[in-house]
Amino acid sequence: MVRVSLIVMAAVLGLSSPGMATYSLVWSDEFNGTTLDTNNWAPDIGTGCPNLCGWGNNELEYYRAENVTVSGGNLVLTARDQSFGGSSFTSGKITTRGKQTFLYGRVEMRAKIPTGGGMWPAFWMLPQDDVYGGWASSGEIDIMEASNGTTSVAGTLHYGGSWPDNTYSGGSYSLGGANFADDFHIYAIEWEPDVMRWYVDGVLFSTKTSAQWFTNAAPGNPQAPFDQEFYIILNSAVGGNYTGCISPGCVTASFPQEFLVDYVRVYEDIVNEAPTVAITSPSSGGTLPAGDVTIDATASDNDGSVAKVEFYNGSVLLGEDTTAPYSYLWSSVTDGCYQIVARVIDDLGGTNDATADITVGTGCGQAAFPAGGIEFPTRIEAEDFDNGGEGVAYHDVDPGNNGGQYRIAEGVDVEVCADTGGGYDVGWLAVGEWMEYTVTVPTAGTYGFEARVASFATGGTFSVSFNGVDQTGSVTVPATGGWQTWTDVAFTATLAAGTQVMRFVPLGGEFNVNYFDVVTVPTAVLPDLQAAIVGFESYPNPFNPRTTVRFELQGAANVDLTIYDAQGRRVKGLAAAEAIGEGSHQRTWNGKDDTGRTVAGGVYFCRLDAGHESQTIRLVLLK
Image (cartoon, rainbow, N blue to C red; front, top):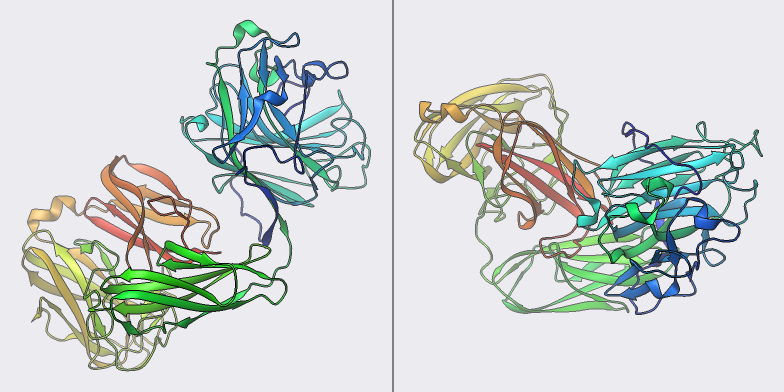
């Protein structure tokens, strides 16, 4: 929060890569009680007079302890249209000064901010001891501040000399016109000796390095003034230079206004060996009768202690156990196929997961992967064979997944692919094996396909059937000179309309397969052939705690964007039959399911359906 000068916001800076720190949680306040924790915080009271009247910014509020409350899992700083102590408004401000101070790390807040003409919410830091002299020679770190209509937020550093010989630099971020006050968002800074990075909801929007800041008090120290302990401040100002409103008559916000803070957390780059966990019962691949299932796990932490073990059905939290031996009784489990997850959390927030795939009762039968199936025309990734397991959705003649990638509990041999676009391919193909894919054919007629294949020396042959009818005969795969030297082979299939099962069958030779492209379709669906999706990715990936999914459309389309777990079960919808125009778009996934529950770490899939085209990308959530 600016203390003296009126700031004109800097333009949004270009994105740069985030740091690689291994952050561990060292302090937090979750505001889950009914009173402010005085071990962490103390209210600031008054107007700043006599030494810094209007808190140095011509602010119009009087800060009172009565305006600081904790309820409903939130810190609440309430601004009121209330005359008190010579001021026209009252509000709340708290600091960790003298109680909790920090040097380097990630400082993060989840909050819903107030809005309206004259409002100025802020999340910021000041030095505990002013090692380099008075403001701003000793620095100021603004993690988030917003004003008036709050359609953008800013992150700013103040440094240089003592006022008025100070200066600043920063950046801002917007939601494309949406108001940050409409929902909770996560605001964070990653503070390292020579760089600071600002984020909103995991999106990096500004970076500053030690080459860009300085203090006149230590010209030979490039890390100064941000190499000393700082404390945290939360406040909701009314009026002031930053808002352009320094008299009560120009304040147009509707009162009361609440600054709701869900939590404040601080992480530091502490080397923390990951804890270990293993599911001892039931065993992966086992079949159990329907009814109650007891999940047992062992866990340990070489450099600390185990805080708890959480148990999940896929991404859905079942429960937890805080004492060894770790166990959970899962009651009344119905027939189906399940991936159970045991997630260990240590005393520094480090995590690790163990998984086991089990069949309960009669199992789940064959089902599309990801859920919803594949609609032509599209690309069918070879590794996205149906769920259902050995003998149901595929047959593999050797034990285990030789490539050890992707769906590692399945027997199909999946490896990392070096073809353009990366991803995975299926290798170690042998006569007698097969894989099936549930597909939807929109219109009857003859479809043209291209299979992406590679063969070191021998080449090979395969066939493709639909609903048990061989539609291709023997298709020849040439020798390409390498297992990752790829080429396309063409074939056709005359198909009825509707949902059906496509089976890929290796007939001979040795080759790998990457994907199948539907490249031509009957005349009746030609108008829909234009590629709707021209870009699809997520960043960061792997991620924790959130990732931004970005996609680009060639034209307007109805879009479904859905997260699935490794078993193809729906986890979270990011867009549903949403009419989206041409160009670039993005959605953020916060690692929670449709009910708002945090999911376990592991592999997930994001499927984008736009018009008649579908694409799927792999996401890795780190815990």
